Each structure stands twice: as structure tokens, then as C-alpha cells.
Image: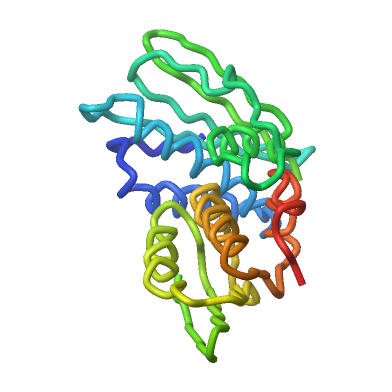
Length: 135
Length: 98
């Protein structure tokens, strides 16, 4: 398991994705799957950076654990900010006509649809979001 | 991300390359804001775009809403990975893809 701990700031998104891509690249993750994982990690990290400690700041930790048979990855994103379960948010209606479409909630929807498993828990004063994906 | 802009009368084409994400989506938003006046046909070329996140989708949704009022918008050369993002978010139904 490898972990990156850093200030939860949108400006650090590139560092987080570079860390994820390095791990996934070394593990032979297909490019398409890597992009899907990046999209989800971006949503999760940007949410933490934007809301977990607002208006203050704090740290986030991103951990990557690779597995064989089946080849895949478990990524956890944790923070010590205010308790918040992003998965509890109601999914947006993606069948509405364009005038009524809104962007809110699409990130969480993609998180649920692009990952094989997503779980949230609040433990030891931490929000912990676990993402699993096999390839 | 880089944006290459080509204008011909009331038609504007923007060719995007790289990543359309939280960091770069504001660049596209700014380019559109500066360029859409009087445009009736907007084409976005995704041939060299590798990645899109919800920050990018937000800009596309706003652009499509605006172009519905003043003309038309299409996205060309969408690759498989970005197409899947459009599928899971229901954007397939509200965008014109060629």
C-alpha cells in the first residue's frame, strides 16, 4: 500500500493524479480504466478540497492498494473534516431535457457508475471513501 | 490543455487537446465567453482530447444551452473513453456528436 498525504487543495489535484497514474501505470492498468479512475479520484478529491474544511484548510490522504487475481486497485481517500457522506446524495435525473439539466451530483453519479464498488464510512473522526476497480 | 481556434464568418471551431479537468475547464469557459458572440455554429473537436471530468461537462452543458438559443453546437471525433463518460452521465442525449 502506498499513501500520499497532502493539503486538501484543488491546486494539488495534479499531484494526486500523478501519484495515482504512476501506481496504475506500473501495475499495467489499461489506459481507459486509468482515465475512469482519474475522473473519479478528481471528483472525490476536489469535493474534499472544496468542502471538507471550508472555510479553513486541512489534510487529505490518498492510499492505493493494488491486487492481482483479479488485477485491480482499492483507493481510499480520507480527510478529518466535517462528516459528510457524498454517496447519500440523491442521483440527478439524467433523462431531463437540456434546459432542466444541472451539473450538481454528476460527479457522484460517475463515481458510482465507473467504479465496481464504492463505500463510505466515518471512523476515528475521519471521512473515508473507498473505491474499488478491477481490470 | 491547449485550444486551437478557427473562425469563419458565423462558424467557430475549437480543437481541444490534453485534459479537460478542474484545472483547465476555466480556460475553455473563458475562451467560449470571449468568442461566442454572433456565432451560429460551434464545433468542438475532441480528436486530441484524452480526458474529461465533471468540471469539463459543466462547461459543455453551459455552452450547449447557450448555443441552443443562438444556433447549433456539435462535438466531433469523440473517442471511446470520453464517449463512455457521456453515456454514464446522460450527456449522449443532450449533445450532438459526429
